[in-house]
Length: 276
Image 1 (cartoon, rainbow, N blue to C red):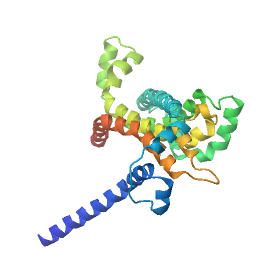
Image 2 (image 1 turned 90 degrees about the horizontal axis):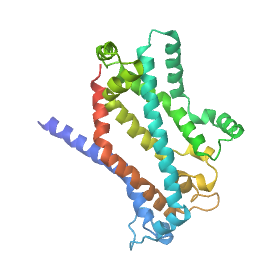
Image 3 (image 1 turned 45 degrees about the vertical axis):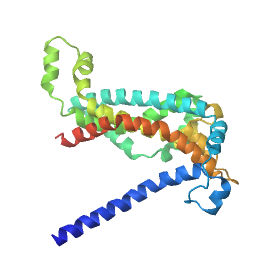
């Protein structure tokens, strides 16, 4: 009993410490957004003497928040929908044609794509996009985000498709359904757990994506929220209060989105864990 109590106490202490570590960045972000530069100079983690929303008002004006928010929403929404649909179709084809050498090679190429970081191909991508006139365009950043995310999304989907019974597809074929119709009417509805997981994860990633958007979107009118926040941190000056205020504003849509979709995410992860 004594050993069990000690073990439970250690686990509780460890969980408290981990909770403090994970919550502390959010605490600092909120506190810094509510303080003046003078109060920040005195203490970074100290509470503000009086609450003020001046930092939020100035951050909204300087980042052109409405325009940046619309840019982020457009890029994130279109990219996420395309990633979900394309990865589902790609995963289905690769899974159902595993015996074919061409599809096996394509599966290996997608797997290698997961391991290549964007920093390795950053310069070639920039030069290619410049020659194709895709810089400072929604089409360019959306294509780049989709292309960089498809390998991992397809990897997740392929593993789930393997557990969809072939008997259902064969029954649909007997009833006269085409391969295309079988996928959308029979297979795709069964992929709801993994499709939800892929969609939620990539929405969160696309919303916070920085490096690709920084390379492609250089005009101020095209910038997304993470890029606008970066400009509060210059070479010779740093405005922490406005930067954290802008970060708090950009976190609100993500927090709301996750709050409404976390049930689907948990279901998807749980379903994937029990698949054989």
